[in-house]
Length: 303
Image (cartoon, rainbow, N blue to C red; front, side, top):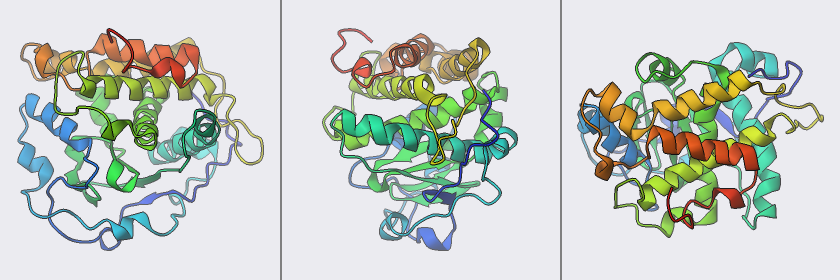
């Protein structure tokens, strides 16, 4: 995947998380709407990690008001598609800007009351509307303050520990997936399902697979999505690009994490994100169909 070098990826809803602007408070998961970090913590525990390392020891919910107010000004040095081709933080911003352009059209057409998410890049640890987190959780979306959080160092982990290809669309898939959770939040899906259950056909898995499908929808349209000057964000995707995205989807499958990363046995009844095969299949569903309707994992008899 290559960004169009001339595309404008400047942003007013992407920035860096700063300690002071994010408020104080404890580091326990919080946020009234619930937080997808809970799912990540479960997977981290399956990998042999200590969930309290991620949560930072517990405490109070983090204040949210300051996170939800004010404009961001973009990441310094991330202005063009060429920047996104050479810098992973700029790639994150470029994918978000491309997704903003796409979903501002697809969302209202699908009956979604549109609102752009915010995206904050951080290093090591961050306070969020859902509580505190460290880089160990990987990228995540907090519905409590409609914000995507990314530590770009995760991409190295995705390649070296989880076995993804490391290609550009492999990295972009991760951001597009988290953006998909924002779409689900706007749809009201997160508050209408049972997030307590686990297993390959559970609502939790269907939620994740739908976000994978929405990432595929973004990829379907990405090379035709344009900036404010009419410049396409991305160059045409290649077969290798799609293989890169599928390698990332496969790398974060529950069965792959349990067996190949953690060195244990696959336990389908504990799954919260879906198998590698499920995740690849639903990404391809979105990529091939390119519609919101094609991603209705909750109406499918089997996912």
